[in-house]
Amino acid sequence: HRTHPPTMATPALLLLALLVPSAATDATAVELGLSTWHEVQRVSAPRESDSRHQRSTFRSAPIRLDVGRVVLTPPKQTPLMMPPEPFVLTSLQLEVVRASDGQPVPLTEVYNHHVVFYAADGKLGADVCGGAHLDMIDGLWGAGAEARGTLTEFPEGLGLPGKGPWFTNIHLIRSEGVPHVKRCIECACHLYGGSEDCCRHMSICPGFPEGSSQRNSSDVKEYALQYTVGWSPAVEQYDLVKYMTLDATGCQLEFQVPAQCPWMWRHDTLQGPVPGAAGLRGSGRDLPSDFEVAVRPPSPNCVTSVSWEYELPAGAAGRLVFSKGHVHVGGLSVSATVLRASGSNSSSAEQSELLCEIKAKYGHTNPGSAGFVGDELGYVVGVSTCRFDKVDERPLLREGDRIRVEASYRTDLWFNGVMGLIDLAIIPDSDGDVLI
Image 1 (cartoon, helix red, strand yellow):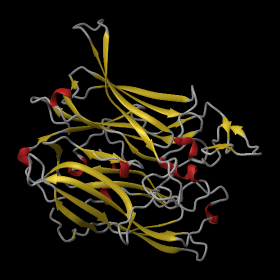
Image 2: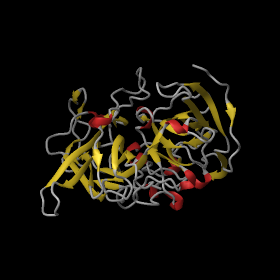
Image 3: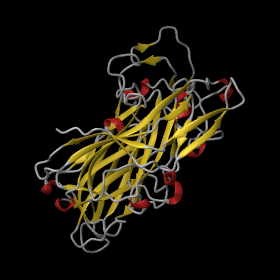
Image 4: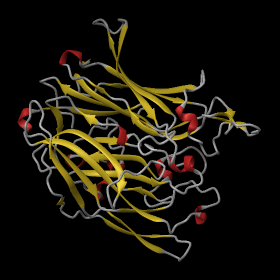
């Protein structure tokens, strides 16, 4: 492999100076600097059908976060660096790292709520809901806490069009040092439920029961967003995929999961019952999660699901080649099933075929133990994917089909502001329209 020296991106136009309350002074100037992106590495990664294929890793300028701080950047003010056009995008993976040395940061320190990429000035959209993200432009690809452990990679000879300009919506939360982590990372609202609307850009997350004045605002650390893309300038050698994101709530995006199976809070840990413990029996709606419950199979009948059906969008008929999903803590799976009439008339019996079921992967390692970063106890650290390399195994999608998206969550805790999204990458019929 060939390694290229780091290069500097053209400075972007985002440098925000914000006043952040401080216990020591009336106000302390804190800058969120995304004014420059760096290409920190480029390596040759030839494929069987493409000797010019490469991988590039990009890193943002430092993002300074104090305890409880929320970053939720407007896409149009957060440009991305990508390889030089023309190119085709074959893979994508991202993570939060330390700005000083690029070392990975655990989810217990900075929680990745979500990062969404926008292509072609927001016009190359995959969001079937249309303009559901910030700035009223459509996102193309996104991931959250599962991002580090989940690789989006298309089969050989397939990719996304590398069409700019590119933007991103970055939603990170410095949860380290927050007393009520569950409320913080769920963006719990004051009256009910949770939503990113209750975690506004540069706000303090709602994880301080005694008020945010009790937090350590002088503890400021620098982080960076880092992402690695597979790409190739040999665009003529690739077929372009259409990318769709479908939501299990029919474009509501966020929803609440009430607890239906009360259990003894902090009595029963992974090591067994706690001797002499006498706690509350209840939903745990207003208590910090111990996160250990998430790594065990849910009790019988302690699972709920939400689903929605979509008409297959125009131009999306073709073959499915890749799928991934997004759920929050508490999520078990998200799936897509194709529904179609078995005969030529509407009264015919309906057939169904599971396209892909994405399962959440939870971390099992305690803080301070070897291998903790990337396997944080009780957090969603990855999701399974479906990749169809063999042409004859790729599920067929036809005009007139409906897609049912279903997300499943456990109900032994109350989970706020959760999501159930699934992505479908499709090779369209030769005469299909372009999904833009």
